[in-house]
Image (cartoon, rainbow, N blue to C red; front, side, top):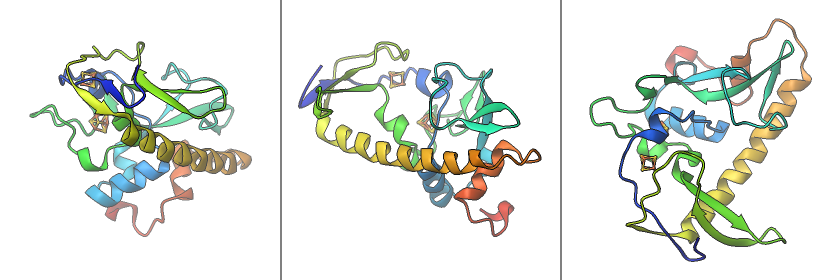
Amino acid sequence: MGRYHVQFKCHHCGHCCTDVICLPTPWDVLRIAMGTGENPYTFLEFLSSEEITGVEKSDPTWLEVNGERYMMAVQRDETVGCFFLDKQTEFCSIYEQRPLLCRLYPFKLHETRNAEFDSFSLHTDVGCPRNQDGIHETKPLYELYLQDKMHQDDYAALVQAFNKDKNMTRNPDDFLQLFIEIVDADQI
Ligand code: SF4
Ligand code: SF4
């Protein structure tokens, strides 16, 4: 655990891009779509509560459709992993545009009782081997964390607006219409 530095070096074992479901915010989706030209309808999927574990029932980003809960995720294949994992190089093919949660993995923030910054450590329960032969400054990690927190708040507000509409004929991916201006979905 470190206030100014945390010891870690990624050894590219592949676990986080293969086995972990990637949950982007709408801001991440927009950055990826605009930076890569990829169509969000192609790279996203909406997982039901039975298809995803580890997300609290009280999480404010659950979409409610016809009595079921759904979570927006980057498409993932059980065998080859994330939609954006380059199968040849085994590196992220959208590294510059990747979601903020991917950038924060496997770091864990610790705050004081007054919700002020204290330190970062490495998550013990996300499957990363936590190699400690490198050094990361905590200041840029905390800036990323704050940015992601703001994005999560925007995300929760959009989901709240979506969940108010009880239209029985809609689909979970209709959520995208709240933040993507559809000129021609095939051209995004
Ligand atoms: S977006 Fe990139 S960094 Fe994030 S899980 Fe997918 S391949 Fe890995
Ligand atoms: S799980 Fe950890 S070591 Fe493996 S690729 Fe991800 S960050 Fe790197």
